[in-house]
Image 1 (cartoon, rainbow over the protein chains, first blue to last red):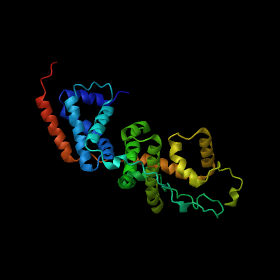
Image 2: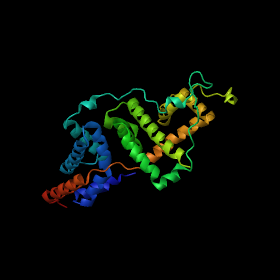
Image 3: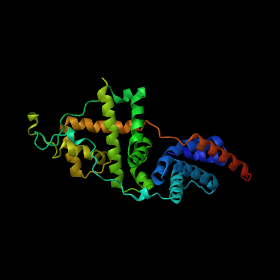
Image 4: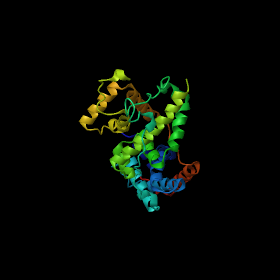
Amino acid sequence: MSSPDDDLVDRLRSGDERAFVELVDRHSPSMLAVARAHVASREVAEDVVQDTWLALLKGIDGFEGRSSLRTWLFRVLVNIAKTRGVREKRSTPVDLRDEPGVRPDRFQGAGEEWPGHWVRFPMPWRDSPERRLLSGEALDLVRRELDRLPEQQRIVVSLRDVEGYDSDEVCALLELTAANQRVLLHRGRARIREALAGYFGRAS
Amino acid sequence: MSTWDGVDFGGITCREFVELVTEYLEDRLAADARARFDQHVAVCPGCARYLDQIRVSSRLLGRVTLDPISPQSRDQLRDAFRSWRADRPEKET
């Protein structure tokens, strides 16, 4: 499977503006998400993304396509982000404070008949969610809840589930251990599920 | 509930189950833990539903789009591209 990026890079080289804009539109959203993990503000992250594209233009003749464009972009992006001032926050370890995926009171307590089992099963999501999502309503909800996730969770979920990157790639880009990456993904997905449960459980 | 007497929940509670779903989906559970997980989900409709809802949530996330860069950034990049193109030495063919 050849990457469609290759064609666009060739066209970019020959001066095709549309090819450049297409690449920018394709990769910038995830670049922005990764940049956010390394710098202090959204504004600085935008600058970092811009500088990365400028670096590509400057270095395009040296870019031989030995690595994929995406790999190249992210390597440069992370370097630029780091020189732009590593924020204090960056070195904070992943917050591993206990955050259950489901509220503890949804499970029976020690004195009850089935300790640790559901008090009540999760409500079924009426209709097929796949159909409901066509209305756009569920999707809007997911989008809103994604924005509300704690930053590290948001970035990991954005790259894994929204953009479809694999875990190795995300760990490398964000400099996370596999275990921490999984914890963040787990919590983020659990919060999104909880929000959807409110939405699908409520409407009839 | 007492009709559940004697049911094999794989030795894990539902509360434990929900914390294992990501490791399960990422295929990070050791064989024995995976077998216990599979056993639990086979007999517990609540956890089967939970697991399915996590999968649906992940799929729905795959349908949303992340924020693009700002229109200003995009315009600036377009301008930068134009000057880059103008400054380039003629490419030999």
